[in-house]
Image 1 (cartoon, rainbow, N blue to C red):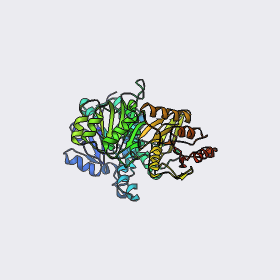
Image 2 (image 1 turned 60 degrees about the horizontal axis):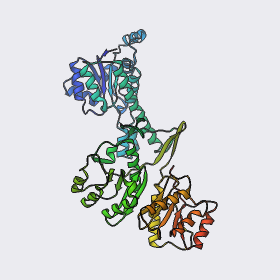
Image 3 (image 1 turned 135 degrees about the vertical axis):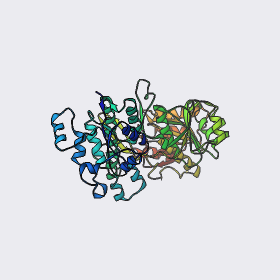
Image 4 (image 1 turned 90 degrees about the horizontal axis):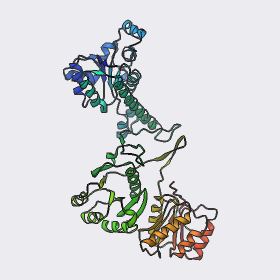
Length: 504
């Protein structure tokens, strides 16, 4: 059913892009009620406006904390137009019907980001705005509610196309968005009071949903909730898909662990090639050499600005995405030659305090896996050399970013073999050895990292047979002594970190 907007309450913090709406309401003869700065804004546009104070016969009190909280405001919003008793009471108490409510909420999140002064933050907890939104949303059958500046364009279109009349579908759509605004706002306030720690209920509200072409597979729907522009400048290519986003996250989480010039190749969230070198081109070439086969169609990431020489080398293979903190102009020209490549300039690290996933009929939440080891406990036959220690640290980080069960084989800060996602740690090691052999790497002098403990000495025994004489693992098995004794008997280094890195 079409309903004509005859009256409106407007009280907003953000007035950007509101001008056309106010003028259009004035042209359509709509009675406008307003407060404070919004009232002045409307009157400065030459549009007549009734002060809410004149309607309620009460001034704004308590330093502006109470302006619209009055029966003459909420009665006009909540009155059911098809209920004779409601209409009779409006008449009895001289309460005007209000058909449109345009309000937004104090910038609570922005204030939290800009200051730590609690009183300033508390004053940005909106009371009247939330109440008006909920009231108008509840009575959507009769009232239009616009709760955010992001909806101004939608309202302007409705006012223009239908000359100020709205359908029930319009009003319900605006109400749905309005309740989303309130829900997000409440979660932000709750998280502030909880100091962003988990509370009794799982709470998460991430705005700006972006529909993906599809989900993990074409028959699945997919949506990304988040603001990618905070992290990246997309310099080239198509929109990121669901699977792209998953791989990009894995790439960013990995590369931010390194300070030295490092390049990595990611495939299906696992690192299949990574190396640290003196120059970026050398790092790229070493990373690619680790597994040229798996690199096809992969996600590439580095922690240094891409130069033209490196760009030319990268361009020789097919890849989907390249992430870097910057690109030289001539490098960008080279890389943009193919239209389907996605080039992302990363502006800031990816930081998340918690990780979560849906399971069964609920949600699992855990701390993010920060840190690489609790201790550096050398329990083998001898101390690690400086070169071995450097490679062991490198291998431990790489292994942390592989799906369990995981083994990483590293030599001279280059991943030369890896096994991941295996149901047996021995299978993971065998796969890593096979990969190293596939690309003609000599395992003599390499090091091995495991994401979890060795329950028996079989893995260190196999590693020793291949010429690997330095191992890093978290420890914690009831039979740690078996692996330790083997290392002592065969002049092997063994480091126990006390920190497991399962990735299921």
